[in-house]
Length: 449
Ligand code: ADP
Image (cartoon, rainbow, N blue to C red):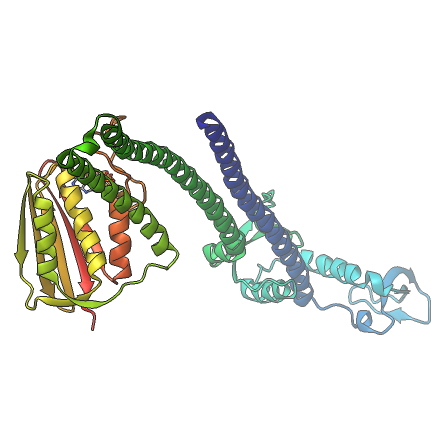
């Protein structure tokens, strides 16, 4: 069983760790793909902006703006011919100039414009006007769905542009330059573009880790329950066998050894049997009450009772069967309290029983009042409860571990029963203990009208 659980747990851990790693990889991959796409789009926009900027810097032939764009190109000069003859200032010679007008396919218009602009620009030595290039660049970016702001810088030379940089070469000047674009708020863009996948991923990681943790807790609980169930079966068997064998022995004594003929012996045996049967029926009642209260069938029957009186008569009864010193302190302003007498009796009885069972030689019970509640505290100087067991002592079947041997008998149901009764009465129960020194159970129950 343990090995199987170990195997399941290792497999689940491996699966969860793989999910966590694949999530990290997915987020990183998503980041890398988004980033390279972003750089590509922005780089393309920068390139296009530089071309547009170039066009704005040069005066292009107006014939390119016609519906059917044309370009008139100079072909050659032929001296002394008419009719189109021109003077030149140097020679004053007449010559004929031959031009040719070519139609430009509108599909190639941009290429032709760019070519002419480049030719014109190469003649100039103007430096790039960053402000107007920035304006064009931001417009082109927004046409491509990017609204972030960039800072442009120009560096001389025809450098090779690394893949992770947004830059473009301006080659239409005599001395080429490189325009670099840097995001004004790179962190904000990084967060914005990756926040959703990262959040989804975090959620999945949390879910996987949470499920693993939950599974581990469930397995632990199951194992604990399994151990408690085995303990319970052992205890119940033991607790039933002991009274049954006492009853059997006394019956045999009455039948076989003539005890029935002696009224004094008969009375003694019957008295023993009644006590044994009372204990058995109280234990059975306790188990039944717990399941009744779990199904909401255990309801309090309120009556006005003399609370100190009730506890006093209970301690009197118990005092005869124990050597422990039991003391009752009454600090209640009024003696009569409206509550369920049967439930209060069971609560006190169980707590007292535990105090004596677990080594208390001196037990102090006190009743007092605090605001809208009445308080009942049971303190003893017994062996105490280790701190690590305190959170579990009100759980059903839980018994403080004492190795394989339980020197004190019990089902691990007493405190669970007490807690259920206190809850039914609308109250709370707390415990404080110092092993080897003391244990105090305090019950707080609101006054019932
Ligand atoms: P049981 O007494 O049948 O084992 P309970 O539910 O009454 O079951 O108590 C649960 C555990 O709490 C006990 O096993 C015992 O170790 C511890 N316990 C309860 N009351 C006391 C006490 N007064 N002093 C020391 N240990 C106690």
